[in-house]
Length: 436
Ligand code: 2M8
Image (cartoon, rainbow, N blue to C red; front, side, top):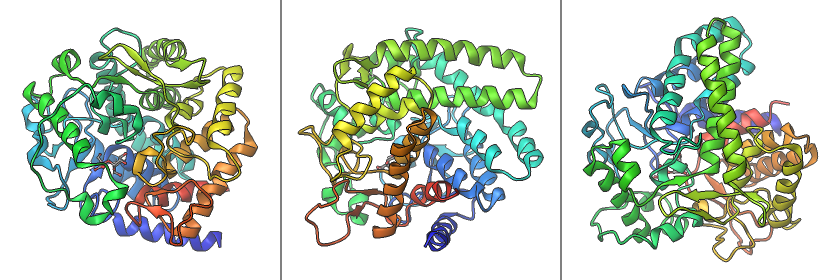
């Protein structure tokens, strides 16, 4: 069984690998290279085809901007099955954008640092992998310099995102109250995602108006960070995004130590790390909810919801052991009933929860992967094992879908895997979870 799943996962990944040296998340639905997908995908490749893993990361970093920024989508090739594409995003408006590739002007969770560390751990030929890392690590470091230099206006060590697509958790209910502060125009455009996936599983047209409007605002300022920080109606400190950055800081420090002779960079990373972890714990933890939450920087108020992002700080060793116990208690009480697979992406006890709609409730394999290692960090081994077995069970039952209903008895007669099929990170991270 395990061998068969492994074989199928490899088939999915290989079929999604493109001649241009990058991997699409899912055929039809997502035809380009996405930033955090590429990181998770490289971890999967590292288990059976190291060269592809390296190529994946190399081609992402090849599209880095001159200011260290790494875009959320790299349009390596033309494809009109996705909207909004390069003509809408117009990355060329920014003077320091890549001259080689068109891309978006927004980013995604900074996973690349810890992905390099994972690739090193997985690689059998450590020397060969270290040579690759040596060649690429400074670009990832420069990306962190970009974040702390441009996305942290109050010098808190907590970076902001200016678009929900930067979070990766696109239509989470966490953003709903921000949408109600905006009144975007009604855009006329042709949705492409709903030609691949049932509309009930995707964001609404009105939600898309908000997404497009935020891009238009950023374009008006030629994607200038200072202007966006001053004027974008969406400005959020996201616990998942910042946890990924902190985990990647830690990974870069470890890798620089292995490489040797990078004392200055290690020092800078360490200073960021101390400040980031401290303010993360003071600003982003909600005692009453017993969970980490988002902070709306534009409207200067906490966004008080529990989502799977709330637990991601376990992955980056952010809570102390006592707080970790509180966090896991919250997770088990709200998300962990026997009638559910772990871990829903949004609080199943909240009225905004929707078990079929994208980031408003379904289980996502990348979040489960983050939680699995986070729980293991704090020795919650049994719950970690449940997260892993639930992930395997869902994929085994339904296939390599993009997301899954968390209810064991959903009342559906058909499969409850939703969104894109043959989805790359579901395959890649399953390979990693199956390794022991
Ligand atoms: C989804 O996001 C894209 C926009 O970036 C979309 O809906 O068109 C999200 O799940 C995101 O986290 C993911 O990286 C991307 C590709 O898998 O799809």
